[in-house]
Length: 637
Image (cartoon, rainbow, N blue to C red; front, side, top):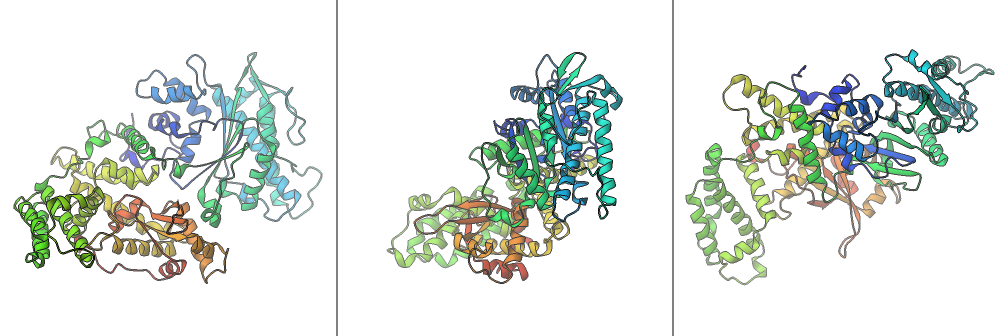
């Protein structure tokens, strides 16, 4: 078996990955989140940011992958994938796969077609897609039947009895003959591109409708006297590579066609452009939309994503021989030991003593401070956390003194005011002020991935480099301490932020905007009384502010630029968009949360929920001139 230097850097959607390797690394957990009606006859649109697993999901239903799943059905480590595919009715124990999964990518050829409007231009687009559907279908059928070469398609006959009358696709009895026609037809389309400005001629290859889908759902394949490939699935990937008019034409005509087979159209969310900020799902009997980025956002989603992530990473760990462990989670210690941060604990306790010195003469806080004195004796993390909780509650009470009687506060009142949110803020303050690790452990690694497989693998790759170094030096067991994890993950998060201007159309403005949101959230999070514990990680535009942004009311200057930048940040998973419902004290709106890896870079908590209202004017200023936090992290200085 060949092992990779860093198995977490390999992307399964790449066609260079063999089908055997793909099946071994594929996590079947994602099949649990696939909609029950995904294989019904209709148009199904899958959208996601890059790296959410869209192309990987589609590849799993191609004939070579299905054959590999079926051949591995008796291998214990791969049987789960087979069982889940069998439960979907896509594989059986006794018979080889029967699903003809036809995969096409729009990454090449279609955007080269003429961009001007007209029946000829639309017909040329339909003709190219139709011949590719036919050709890819026949090649997929050959893979399904285990043919070693295309010439074996001559063994397959075509039954057109149930095929409607088609103008663009000929009635040929032999699959090899039809494959040759499709190849020739594709060449004619490209030949026409070279002479498009001239006369079209009588043999101009234009189609008046997308006949490839009608042909695919009706044609019968006969091999050795029996009908094969009775199940069909058409998968059109990379739709974002098409021109906007081509996408609209394909989507509208296929929906009107009401296909009897499932037609999957997959694209990056960026294809929606600024529509993303105000889109509504076009659901119906014949059109279903799925957002893979929001697949894990339901109440059970995070727990399911952790299980999914563990399955992905453990499969990768088996694809290496440097670190001698079976599970990725075994490599990450999730408990911080006080002795590892003894110096920071001592500094924190002294800091607490200095800051509460001014309260020593106040009768109101006598019991609270007496309780805190007991914790200053023990130089450990648990005691330090209690002191930071006490400090936050002291600041809160002091800010509200004018509203309360000057009575002595009891220990019970301190405990009543304590909460998991306050403790989360205290833990974050300890990280910010003292450099005590915060970003470590498998659960937080999964949260940092923001439900994106590619981000998960990038973070895991950074941790794996640390594991490799430990193994080469043979200094200790191949387990990363919380201190090491925190350092490696923060470095990976910083690289993500630095790469934004190089990898996005509006990258420079996007980076300034994200830095400004990060600075704003930082100041809100680390106010001494932790008013939004555990912290703020997003900003909200009210419905009125959104109306300014989308032009429903008189727009402000540069609002179109801001609209493009925000839409791209959402589409590229740099911001996570969530709707905010109206309450008695505020109207509805949209919250834009920072990507969780970026939260790590900015030193923010990883929970969602904390946000503050801003205006379109604020965001426009931040986009053009970076906002800086009013205070700096002491741990970073």
